[in-house]
Length: 579
Image (cartoon, rainbow, N blue to C red):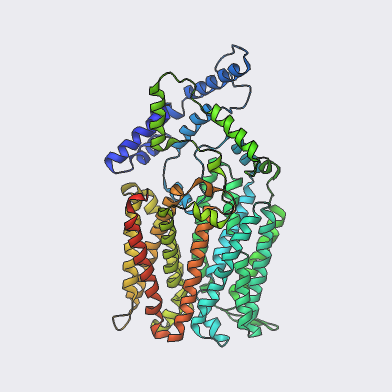
């Protein structure tokens, strides 16, 4: 009760100050040895109260009086909802919003506020540290695989007799396949984690080998098939699902932040690695140069990863999960709901004031989640029906920022070669520098900016800055200069990163809890939205190439500007409902 009361008081301070005072207060006092806050959620007295409540409730149920000391540990596990509520209130106060939480929300791995003790026990039994590392390594390698070809894709296309702008199709082929692979990998992870990861590694090994061999075979078809194979091996849905289902709640936030950090580092390392691989030699009939080495290097990396995976990954036990599967019969569900309603009643109802307090707590966002609301969506259509208008706007924003970022990154090699005659190494350095801004930007936003402004304010401001970056990128002033391109690209990319962080942070809080589990979860919906945006952006680059490289920049920026303006208008229209 003290923990809940303190949390509500701090929320009032936040609302009055228009500053997240709770974050500063809790983080500055949570671990201080002389802080009175310790008495609320870390003092031994709270443990004694929990023990007393738990033991006495157990005695009442069995109608037996043991009269043991209240300080003795209870004989049975603490399974009473009242005790669970006390623990959950303590956890909510302890784990206030901070940078780690802000980063973790990027992964859209949504957590329930009041997990059942049985679920926490399942997590402990299924957790395996090396397996988690293998999932994060898969995430990192896949992002490296995605962006390692960007600096050289235009030269590779021209070496096979195609136009430089065909690089859009080459880069986008991976995203096309990922649209489908995300669904079947998410469904596959319902039954296994090991097998889809093995399949992913094999397919990516084959895809990268095909990509590298296309040069000696002089086949553009082989090049595109290689990239399609790489997309069919995208196991990000499995990586996200493993963290959601198999990592204990107490470290799930750190694991989610690791997932996001691995993606960001892979995005930066991909182009940087391409810039290093500027050598040319031949072994028998195989050519190793700047265009084929990304494929060979990634093929070897996936082979090494596959060996590590085969000997080190531990498949979580499925028996416990099947016993707790949401696909129970209607009669069992109804009986369970009746039992839970009975157990979750207040211990003492003495007056109408108690009921009024309960209603006030529900209005404050403390209502309990029913069994029906926890049942996952069973199809894309049912998942879409669960989306509120504000969530749909946020998915539109996610689509817009992914489209703008893909246009900037995918056409960078063609544009900079045409206007500035940049070499592959220079393009690689530029893209790597953009990728390296991801973590610092999130540190600044998560630690400072998000504590000073509301998320919806940051959301709208960053959308406007993305629009400004797009406008500054247009080729209007002659000649088109390097400072204009670099500064406008940096503004667009950094603003899009801020927008992505705040948008996903907000999305993870307002999306239906039914989308936190199952095949068709919130992470899959956001992945599909971003992947489709990348596919359309890469197709736009290739189609705009038919008008000539001189028109490529302005033609591809026009759709970005249009979608950005629409998203700003939609945000303003739903501004008050984005909380």
